[in-house]
Structures are given as structure tokens and as C-alpha cells.
Length: 153
Image (cartoon, rainbow, N blue to C red; front, side, top):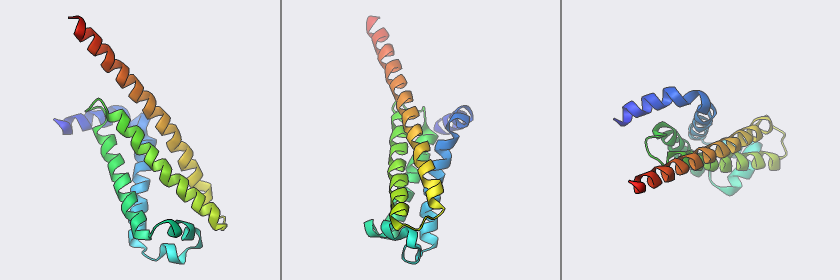
């Protein structure tokens, strides 16, 4: 039943949520790159501010959990009433990563290409948070209206 819902939901919502799927996958890919390049933080000057916050393997684990969790939230979207709230949470958590990566690259002072990309990812996911919160509010309103109608009968 849930697989049928996921298939239908994906067909219906992917076009309007493509950026959410892409950004979740990017965070998951970040984890993969950190695992495949264990010396990235120590060898790359742009990553030193991030290394000062946490070890590279910790970043990898957190990116894995956040990216995979967000993909799961997107897959179950609509199967439960609170799923837009989960989408908003997933996008918000991703914003924390994009923000910290952006700040880390800026602090490194290397003016790498990351400064051309990560601020845009942060802005895009900030927009996704707002869209998901709007969807969550609409979901809550529909639920409240159904409850009022149900109480009348």
C-alpha cells in the first residue's frame, strides 16, 4: 500500500518538488564524497573551518542521516497528515548544512568555487522550507475543517 502511494505521489509531486529531491541527494552525495576522500578536510584549505567544527567522519555521518532522512520524508509525502511538516524539517536541517558549508568556505578565504554554489543551495532550500511550511499549514487547516465537519454529524 505504501509503495503504491509513493509511486503515485512521486508522479504527482516530483515536478514541483524536484529541487527538494535534488538537494536531498546532494547532501547524501556530500556524505559519500567525504567517505571516499578521507583526507579531504586535512588536504583542502577550504575545508579547514569545517574540520574545526567536527571531524570529517562526523560530517559524513550527519550528512548521510540528514540526506537519507529527507529522501524518506519526500517519498512518504502525503501518506501521513504530518508529512509536509517533515518536508519542512528536512529542508530546514539541510539549510543548516548549506549555511555552515558556506560560512566555512568564506572563512577559509580561498575564494573557491564552493562560494559560487553553496549560498545558492542555501537560498533554494530556504525557499523549500517556506513552501513546505505553507503546505503544512494547508494540511493542518484541512484536518481542522474535517474535524469540525465530523463533529457536526
